[in-house]
Structure formats: C-alpha cells, structure tokens
Amino acid sequence: CHLPYCKSLIFWGSRFEYFQYKGISFPQIIYSGQVLQMVENNFQVRDDDIFNVTYQKSGTVWMLEILSLIRSNGDPSWCRTVPNWDRGPWYETVIGYRIALTNKSPRIISSHLPAQLFAKSFFKSKAKVIYTVRNPKDVLVSLYHFASMFRPYKDPGTLDQFLEGFLKGDVPFGSWFDHVKGWLNLKDKENFFFITYEELQEDLRGSVVRICQFLGKDLDDAAIDSVVANASFEAMKSNKMSNFSLSPRFLMNQKKSAFLRKGISGDWKNHLTTTQSECFDQVYQERLRDLNVTFPWDKE
Ligand code: A3P
Image (cartoon, rainbow, N blue to C red; front, side, top):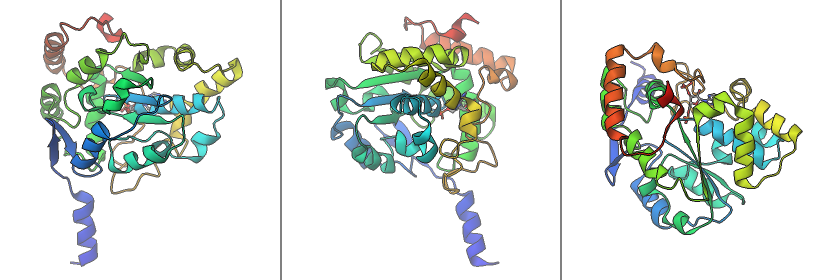
C-alpha cells in the first residue's frame, strides 16, 4: 500500500463527531467552543452591521448575494472578485470570526446561530437582522444532500434516519423549530426583517425592493434589475465566488452534491414518502402551535 495515498484516502473519507455547546451540536472542524463563547460575549456589534441570519439551508448564500449586490448599488464587481465567505463571513466559525473583525463597515455578517447563542452586544445595538425562513421539508432535503458532501458533517445515513434526527433537533445548530421560534420572538422589532425563501422565489424583485427599504438603501430601477439578475440561481451557479468551487476539497465534495443543488421550492415532494410527510406535519403542528405566524407553505 502506498502510504501517502492511503493517508489521503483516510483523510478524504473521514467524518468527525460533533461537540456540544450549550446543548447545541457543532462540527469539530471549522467550529470551536472558544470562538462560540467569544461570539456570544466579546464580539462588538456595530450599529451599521447587517446580519444575514438563517437556519442552515434556508437561502443563506442567496440572501448574502442579494445583500452584497445591494451594498454595491447593483454593481456585480465585488461579487465577482471576492468569495462570498469573505463578503459576509459566518462569524461563528473560527475563520469567519477573524474575517468579521477585520471587515470594513457596513459589514454583512452571516450566521446560523440560534438567537440564544447570538452576540449579546447585538441586542443593545441598532444593527439589523434579516432572517430568512424556508419550508422545513425543503430544508430537510437540502440538508440531507448537503450532509453527504460537507465533510465536517456526519454521514446522514438513510433519509428516514436523518428525518428522525432533524425532527428531534439532533443536527448541527439544533432544532429548526427552536431556531425559528427563537428568532421570530424579535419579529416586532424595527431592526428585524423576516422573509421567506418562497417569497424570494415568488417575487425576487419585489423582495429586493422591500429589503432595500428596510436597509434604507435607495437604489434606482437599473440597480435593482442588476441585483435581481446577478442573484439568480444561474448567475450564482456560474460565479466561482458564489458557487463554492473555490472551497477546499477537504471541506466539500461537490461531485456528490452541488452546494447550489436545485434551487427550487417543493423538492421535498420528490423525496419524502406520504408517511414521512405526515410524521413531519404532526411534529410541525405540535411544535409551532403557539407561533402566531402563517408561512407560505402553511397555505398549501
Ligand atoms: P437546494 O439544496 O434545495 O438546491 P444555504 O445557502 O442556506 O446553505 O441554502 C442552500 C440552498 O439555497 C440550496 O437549496 C441552494 O440551491 C439554494 N439557493 C442558493 N442560491 C439560490 C438562488 N439564487 N436561487 C434559488 N435557490 C438558491
């Protein structure tokens, strides 16, 4: 056996356990308890920070592209020359934390953290949060594919096994239900804007206009058209700064599943059986019973 070759095979094939931080699972690669603690207690939020917050697989990089383009008044040069993780770093990651500290204002900062683990200084600031929510059945399917290609995550097993873990919140970043309930507690605050992936799909231009209003950014029609054109699934897929083709191979194996996979709503119907879907509905109704919000998929 050729040793370096075997080593690389072991390395490429390796999967790691998660660690727990305040009851939430995080992968051992990219994250650390020390940084999570610093995010919560030491990170200094600036009043002009814009936070792009989501439960994972809900349209984070899509919103990041929209926010990057709005920040540049529709000019796509920034998006075409700087990787998305530098434009809007995930500040709970070891590397993203450092990038967020050094980025110039107004910063765009991405995060999947549940509200209770977010930077405490945010809650005393005027910084804005845009919270994007997606039909959790589509989140499940997207996350299932993502877990198969993202090496810091555990192998997802069968969809049935993964569904069980997802409904229990036994996945990185914890339960979708807790995440949504925690963040939507802020829904009446003026520095909080809540939108769904489905609304972006349904009316991207109208959504961009609403986001601009929330941010106090006055873009003319041509600039808005450019945001819409450059934030399309196709445009992002062909932009190497946005499609994760520059991501190191030890993190992502996009031969298994592309990061920008399908980019549609309702793909869950191609994956979940009737029994799995009904089981999901039951938990959904129980867990969100006391949430006073109707999502686009609730009307289906
Ligand atoms: P699918 O796996 O269903 O295709 P996140 O950025 O939160 O990790 O979410 C990734 C999901 O958003 C993926 O969903 C991805 O394809 C989708 N996505 C990213 N950019 C998009 C765009 N411009 N239009 C539609 N969907 C997009």
